[in-house]
Each structure stands twice: as C-alpha cells, then as structure tokens.
Image (cartoon, rainbow, N blue to C red; front, top):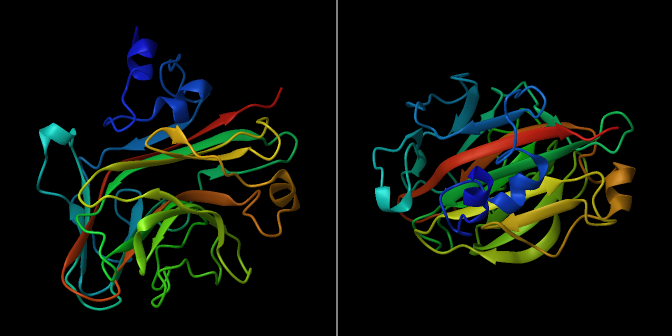
Length: 285
C-alpha cells in the first residue's frame, strides 16, 4: 500500500521522487534496519539561525556580511511546506551564502567504481527562488568535497563553480542565465566546470523544483550517473570512461551535500530549500 502511494506521487509533489529513490529501497521498501541502506533526510524543522563558519547541528555555512541563513518563518500548507531553509541576500553585489552537511570535515558518500566499494548513491533537494532575473541569486546544489561552503565557492563574474580545489556533481544556474538549470561536474585542479547538459531544465520564479541524481555502478553503459528534474530522468549522463579514469570526475572522492548561492547585483534576494536528502546502498555481491 505504501509503495503504491509513493509511486502515485505527482512529479511536482512535495515528497521524495519515487523514480529517484524507490528502485533502490530507500522508500517503499523494508527500512527495519537503516544501517543496511544508509539514508539522510532533513526537513529543516530545527534549523535555527546560523553564524558563518561555525559548526552547528552537523552543518557549516559561509555567509558574507549581507547574507542570513536561517529557518524560514513562513510555512505554506498549499505547497506542502514544513521546515524551510532560507538564504537571504540584502542586495550587496557579489554576496554569497552556502550551507554544507558535515560541518566542513565529513564526507558521507563516494561515487566509486572500485571493486568492493561500489554503492548506489542518491541525492535530491526541493528548491525555490522567488525571482530568476539576471543578476539575482544563482545557485549550485549537489554532492561536493567537504569544505566547499567557503568564500567564492561560486565565481563572482559568471556564477560558475570555482574550480580551484572543488569536487562536485549536481546542478547549477549561472548569474547571467538564472532560469537555466545545467547538470554539471567539476574535479579538483581541472580547468573548467563540465556541463553534462546545458539548459537541462527551466527554473520558474517562485515555484518549487526537485533536483535529483543517481549513481548506479551497475546501470546501463554510459548511463550510470543519472540526473532528474521533478522526478523525470534527463537523457544526458556521464560516460563510463570519464568515471573510470577518475582524472576529470570526482570518482572515489568523499562527498557531502552542498547548497551554495550568490548574487551579481541588484536588490535583496532569497533562495529557499524545503528539504534535501542523500543515501548510499551497497550493491556488491
């Protein structure tokens, strides 16, 4: 009965996307022993108010002087909101705010193709920006190397991820194309963030969107790293050769959840995240 209900969840419904999670037993399956399928979910109902560069409740944030990260006061029942994370920018040019699970030191998962270490890795978040005007907040959401919630994690001129020392796979919007959601990855020391798919989806102002990803080491050839928007799988993936080489993609690197935002100029702006989740399921025989 539970499985049927979860499968019937609409693509833009409030909950975890069944197409992202259900096949691997994270939802709708037997969760009597959570140690067998490790899973983290935060609805931000106990977030509070964050101080920059301070470990609080398993998180760490980076906040420029004009940025506040806290639990949102509003809760819209019509949109299924409960706890909501709010990153507020006061309008100061190039202000940046980010939050990372693991307090800047801990990784939870690794996208590995090494025998004995292969696991399905799944992550998803529900995100909303009130405006998508050029110059307003851009963002990056995904799995990153610990310690990326820092100054200039997002570049000032473009809104791209700063490649100096970052390992990342997930989604981003840019400062000059705020409504276009790109799927991307980055590897420490490479020259540029790589777009898996340019303009993979469209961000609509003041509308929740769910961004998810799955790494399945036993998936279809050249389609092991999958991306989803509102529970619908996108066609483009990362090739097996790139993942196996591990010289351009963060293979075998410890990763954790990261949500980073930055504005170019203009007035006050805000980014919201309703929840985020990450899970790991060992699939070695």
